[in-house]
Figure 1 (tube, rainbow, N blue to C red):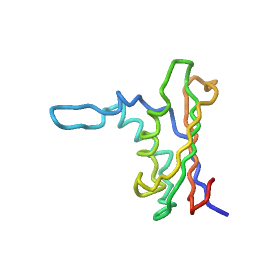
Figure 2: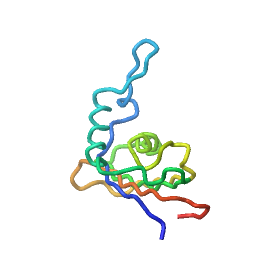
Figure 3: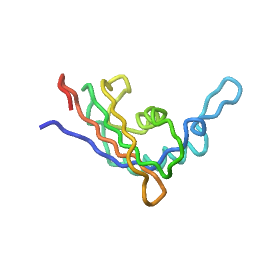
Length: 121
């Protein structure tokens, strides 16, 4: 049976709020650092499960409200938060779905990841 890693991450900051530019330097904003720290706490015990494997990602998005959102912007934020693989170039397949609004009005993202090993998930 193929191993599948699963996690629930908090609702991230927007891509526009994640990074800041000063001169020619790009850096992570304070909101971006807070999000990455929260993910680090959640994923603190996680290790690199798929060291050399090609992987797939399954992302379910539970937004905090009904505002219009481009969920494709969340893909890079999620990839960068995960310690499950060494490099984003290992990802062969990404499926992302918008789900119902989070009743708690906080929003969250459910992520699953597994090795493709030449097969579909």
